[in-house]
Image (cartoon, rainbow, N blue to C red):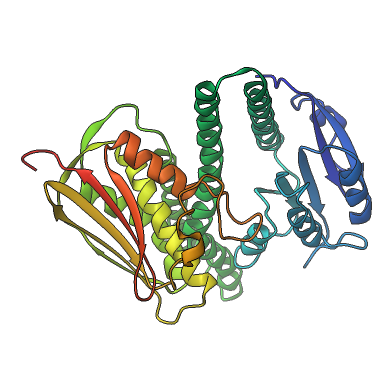
Length: 392
């Protein structure tokens, strides 16, 4: 696959990747900066599509004048550069704090040095192809603005919104996998560290090694299964089907529950076992989006004893699903805009403003239902109402 555009990649503080490897990338121009200041100057004068920051050295790797994390955070704080994908190359990987710091800096990927050639090419080419798709969509949008009627414009803009929502879902999936993997990675680390202790105490024998290998392989298999589960959760359903509400709800909650546990947010689920006609995976993503919004409101307002509740019940021949939180609610002056595309109350770079818009669009257009909102005494309530399957 070849991209339509020639893209620009900025390598910061990186001198070890062979030119032959770089030549295998999708068509691109290579820019190199030795310092953070040089990188900022290049970003000010060139249109960069992907940034690769090499964090070489040890504990907290430093670039001259500006650390790699600080440079990434600077990139995210600038409106002109905030959406450029950032990839880290590093010799050091500490799962407890490194991943969190990466995501605060807006990093989309991290490769351990020296990177495997195929993995490096796959990651970089994926970034270039995503950038290419975005440019193609922007070009389509410009053409529509100039030559198309209102109806055609709206149709193409919906395609752009859907594409951007999928990109946002990809980012969300990476974050969710990171949370699901954190504990298994820690466990593998402890098992590896224990090998040295076993050697020192003369406990290192075939039985010990075999037990350790089996434990590590079990954990790795579970981590692999996690990827498969998330891949299935973020795929689009091909056709409408009858599905169980309880099963869809349980699967959706299982995906976001690790983050809620990490932030000590309680979740209470009370659902009936009804049957619905529609797209179970996309319906589950709506539930995840609503719970994720509730989580963000709770964290933003630093709520004590935070809780998110999900209840479902029959209502006038339909099925209602209600998601409530005690996150403080939505200010009246913006309540009427929360379902608008690109509207977000989050800081720049922290939200796309597409979650509620795409959720409402899906429930209304694909499930024949409604998604509404109202403030409660201590938070917000989102209510989904969809038709039930007769006889369920």
